Image (cartoon, rainbow over all chains, first blue to last red):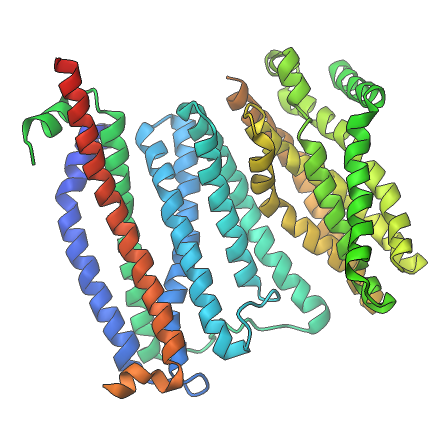
Length: 248
Length: 221
Length: 52
């Protein structure tokens, strides 16, 4: 068991293994997107209050879920990287950051676009989730910025791991501070993005899209990690065989 | 304990000796609040409602400005490495630096802020609450800020990225602190938000030294 | 079909949201793919220089 884990951490094994899986992941992801989009845009009935604008949730909500999921993956990879010094974990952590940032950006933009017909404004500072998402974006940008600012990349990775762990504690604090404050003097403000009872025909495409997004994240993560592995190991024999030998 | 006090005393003496470092953030603090009033030319009623936020934002910016040299001189003269390899736990020594930093900037802001709050039109009672939030909140800024400084201490233009790193971490403090005063003015109970601020204080004071010393170890290595 | 595109009057909002999602997602996939080609070329060049 330990040997399998250790082998998985070896760069050439990872490269080969991920290379084999990627096409299948890609196909599955494409199918999920197709089904999810069809369900979300065509099959799901128009909402009673929001008409067809609610369909934005099929990209907004998965993007938001992923923005937080990716952060957790990044922080955990960082923790594993500094505790057990596993290089691949470090690479995973670094690869997560730009992907997480783009999901967060997407969640913010689609959330803003959705907000306009719903609330009449492009932004709503009182909404806990939007504010948390904005700060999450800053956390991601901070991670990316810190890594590029430190020259010694080994040091940089360690610093970034610490930063992401510190940020992890911050996320629930940010989220609950904004919620709590809204309840303090306005009475419970139910976030407009809360849908306590959502019809099944509307829910299923959402879950499919969420799965599609998750798989998409996995794919892009592997693509980025493979690049990083290739570059870091450029002087090793297996890379020479791979790149130099076959002129693809 | 000895080393802890030594570091504390040394930082304070240095601050008094090099008063410019101390005055710059303070001046900035006052300037921001004054400029706000000049720039807004708002009716007194509007200004009062914004007063807690203005003071707190200015406090945040002043903290960012003053954080930069928290470890810088230590890094240059090698004192930082001494702190890391010393027999005393590094987190304890970091705590000394955090407290020293607060005494130099946060404490001063806590005293001067309410005075400026009165200038902005806050009532005496509201000013007392502002004082309370500053008293509890500014140490949090020093503690959380120390993490950011430790991560960026070796960098040439560390100040820019320091602000970026530390900003998301500061926001909950800003929100809770300024909202506490606003809530008080509106007449609602503030016990809950004060408790939350206190919780943040305890959390940051206990966890930050640990995170900061880990970050210092990385930066100095 | 027109009803589908019209989205109950919210066409601009819905389609711009989906549009930007598509752009972001496609870019996310394309960037690492382009990067890989660049890396491959860079390594090949490096191996060439090592030989010379």
